[in-house]
Amino acid sequence: MPETITELKNLWSGITAKLRDSIEDVRFFDVFLSESYIHSYEGNQMVVCVNSKLAATILSTKYLGALQDAVKSIVGTSVKLKFDVAENLKSTAPTEDKPLYFKNSVVNPNLTFDNFVTGPSNLEAKQAAMYIASNPGANFNPLFIYSNPGLGKTHLLQGILNFIREKMPGKKALYCESGDLLQEFIEMASGAKQIEALKKYICSYDALLVDDIQLLANKDQTLVFFFDIFNRLMASGKQIVITCDKAPSELKGFEDRLKTRFASGLMVVIAQPEVPTCVAILKSKIENSPLDINSFDPAVLDFIGSKFSKNVREIDSALNRIIWYVTNFRPTKYIDMTIAMEALQNLINVKDANQKLSEQKIIDVVADYYHLTPSQITGPSRESNYTLARHIAMYLIRTMLDVPFTKIGYTFGGKDHSTVMSGVNKVEKSLKTNTNLQTAVSDIRSRLKS
Image 1 (cartoon, helix red, strand yellow):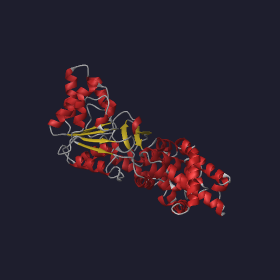
Image 2 (cartoon, one colour):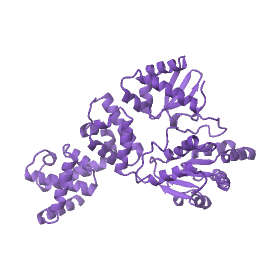
Image 3 (cartoon, rainbow, N blue to C red):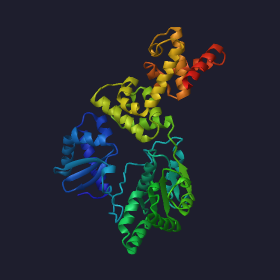
Image 4 (cartoon, one colour):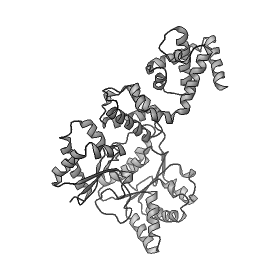
């Protein structure tokens, strides 16, 4: 029975290749098996790690029979299949040597530098991670990467580990979450010999990669333990990489001596991704999905990229909602703004309840100012008084709320983003010379602020 990473990878490649021959909807198959791997294979049970809970559900139902047939054709016997996400799997992903400690640390072999989408917000962090992976311990030690949650810190950290495993023969890297480090310390704290054995084990690696160090705040004994490990690794010229949700100077519950050491190497921040970066991330995910990139209206891509730009998890959630919606409820060959808004309605309602009210308030106030109804402003009529009020409302929503053109277009009956942009530009241009318009816009702004 296969035990090593290479053996399990080869087995899973054979199974998926066999499965492709029997499944007609190849794109749908690809998205739910992308980044999947055999987590464990013991006895007659095979546990497969997949990229989402939705994938686990689909593969456990719609494709279970086909998968079982594919597995049987490769291994020669019936095997029980279980699909789950990495966060729910308690044991480690398969490794070449069985670890003495950190058996609960989950490493995804598919988190690599190659599939990390880069933009201005994360370019420096990726460059630093790639340099460290190629030259562990040589310079920039420690590397401290910080950002808000969901922006790719864990991806980069595991990318370093997977790069060292694949490209740096003779070098070993240890990845652990701070919670795992705390748990190991608690279990070993019954005696000095056990603690020392754990320290020696950690320091036997060429690189230590610690995720979410902020979780050790106020864990005084564990921090003393980590401080000693930190110093030993640094003295031995070994690499340390730490991720956190804030800069070292902002950490609470850490002694100054640790914070100064965190800041002594190279600190890089991952900022909130720009809309083009979010769109690029979205496109990369669509390319591995059953939904052809050409089936998306470009306005939908821009809308998701701008509306769900807080972190990558929001983008994942939005795309999964669309996949689920058009697969199960509204099959379509082309996803326009109407379809997208139907699919994302619940997410947008929760996310933008207050903002929707603000948009509606602007429309209501403009309508009242020009003695119109809100539906006349948002409707299709091209009468000059309607058009002027409509353009002013668009202009105010854009300038006061910073709402994307695509979203404004949806609010005004599904108008194209270029139409909205043209209307906003007309108002901006006219405001420079038209005193009547200046007065009207000023009066409306005053009403909105009252």
